[in-house]
Image 1 (cartoon, rainbow, N blue to C red):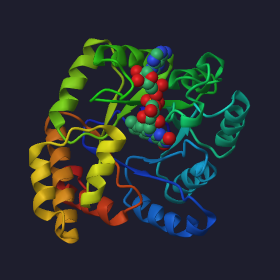
Image 2: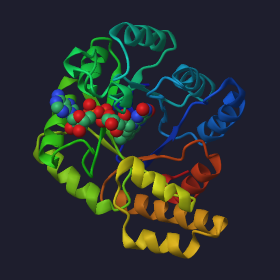
Image 3: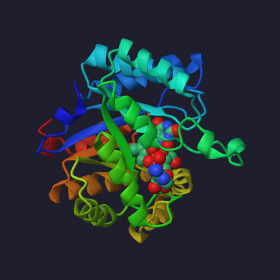
Length: 290
Ligand code: FAD
């Protein structure tokens, strides 16, 4: 099922993100975690794509199995900046053969070893280049957006202008980078709607379940960590089970506030942790009607 249909809901709907195995040896354990998450019957599941190619081969396989074995709509991620036109063409054919209908079209992080090159010669410089190509092939396309600005953007106005170009090129929905202060999202939504971006925006929520994750999350996304969340880490950071409980409660609270403010689609970066996905869904059971 195409996600532009799935995202039309006015009730709360949750989706979950998983990442593919890095090696053959870990395939079975990832697959079993993915099956447990899919059994929760989320609105959809997304499967990430390794920018450097390390785990790319498994993205399709995992996405295909989620759809076939559980009937859960899938969103296969695809990055382009390290790819050639030919390799993307092959990937598109493989996605079609696997019955993938929804693609998250991403640039990916810039390859550090190629930063000195003349980028005008690259096959893909930005996600919009990939979006144009995928659009011709009939996929339902999603794009990434950044309530706290993409780290390479000079300012939010410029970032939103580039985001509008992605939507005009064919993005039918957007998923946000993680954020820990909902006001940042509300402010962002106001600005993008004002800029004429009307597609559904899926809010990305990362449940932080251990103290080390905080530093990684900040390095990765540059996200602002509110004092209320810092206090949780200070209090429970050295006590893993309490930290996990507090992190899940914080994410649950964020989701309830989002829905109370009419944000109906929430994507949980539960990352191959079925227990976290189950707890969040359980905390919201009455609101979700599940
Ligand atoms: P773009 O939309 O191309 O934007 C990148 C930067 O370029 C921005 O600063 C933008 O403002 C600017 N820009 C865009 N177009 C132009 C233009 N024409 N001229 C000048 N500037 C321009 N990474 C992975 O490797 N695998 C994944 O599976 C993955 N999944 C993700 C899912 C989500 C929801 C998010 C938010 C991120 C994900 N990422 C993933 C990370 C992503 O690849 C990085 O954040 C990357 O740096 C930017 O990708 P993008 O698609 O947003 O790029």
